[in-house]
Figure (cartoon, rainbow, N blue to C red):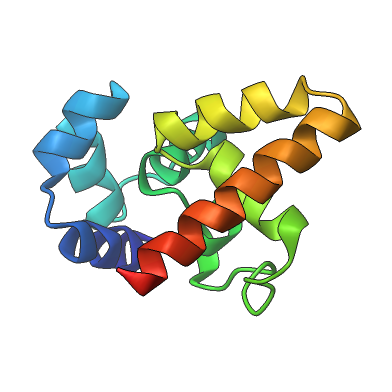
Length: 120
């Protein structure tokens, strides 16, 4: 598990100190995991998974059942709701409160925006 945690830190360019500070986990806990003194508890795993925007499964195994489903809306919703991007979480929460007609309008607006960005 620690190897995957280390890879995620490297990929994001963060230190265990920063992860600890932002998740409320004592940095010495990470050292204890690395040295095999004890295994992480589920609540701490969830905090770390949330911080990196991955599943606990990925954090533990390096594999994600959702992998390969990137175009699937449900997969995107799960990733947005469990990730560390508060703007996406807030937008998702707002969209979930809309009725079907308003959701379609927001979708159409988002598609127009995406097409405009592609055109430059």
